[in-house]
Image 1 (cartoon, rainbow, N blue to C red):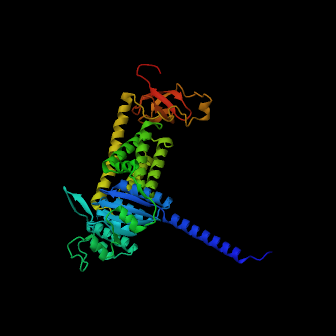
Image 2: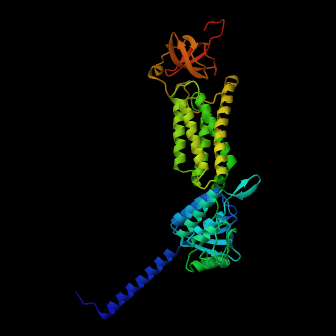
Image 3: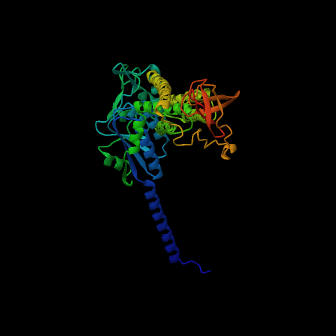
Length: 460
């Protein structure tokens, strides 16, 4: 092997050095990434939570260097702020709060959750005591809610290495910070105060200056726009919409428990329940326990409709309604929900259950007169026996057709008939017949017998 000459050695060294420099530049450029901008303008609601979660997730996937939260908000819902705070703390990307005009109340919690806070001129941060609407005006929440919120602010500030007492003074008027705020006043920080007390890392006149301060070599500014989905979620989690979904969902399920088969009412009820829990789950209000209550309730109602043959609303159906009610309740309240809000949630759930039962009873009472049938429109009902037809029925057995008996129970339209001392389950074609009515079997599906009234003075 020929020995390497001095010139050859130098050439190889220079080539290696150039390769390392190019690689370093490439890695540095890749590491800088783009800067993503998420805007929280106006009141913080449930749609804000889904917007923050999606924006932070996409920024992480894109390898963003920073995510800026442009905050100009007077506050909003506490439960939404808590869910948004959790999303920010869990983010795997550097988060920067830009206090653009004001970040008050719920907005202050989002700002404190970010790793860095930058103020715009005349920006303010704080005034975060929770309030409730009572007798036509806003008043401070209960001491329990204020205490919990105060601890939440303190824990968030501690996580980001900021003075906890300052965060507590934003929530509780009884907190005193010497040289900053006296007892009886809520704390609201200006930019200079925030800088002096560890709640501002920088000041920037606008977003362009902020991006330059963060990283002069950063990539483009990517603006993550609000989505139509966020507006839909905000609408579906509004109190009156949630109440409508609850009532319609329960009415549909109760109708299906009384009418045979599974049809329009059951489908509509399931869609309303699904829309409620889907929206509340996406915005962080409904947890897995709420979903578990819902699934358990639906399972019991499924048993009531397709398995049990009780003539009236049975135990399984009632237990299912209770579990679904618990699912609604746990999806509407959280650890920081005030007593007044919790009572309103209980009232809404209770009213939904009662209205559902009453409306369903009225509908079922009208069914025989209008000839309207909800059951069996979408899926084959027990009258046709498509889902449960026995082997004998499939072979065309009609041994029961023409047999006469009496209604052993009220037929609504499902019940029991007595034929020569033999009690069997039957379905009434007319929709409702009282106990003791003479009946005749007109169709035998193998699973249930379809009957009709025997008119007085006639044969069969």
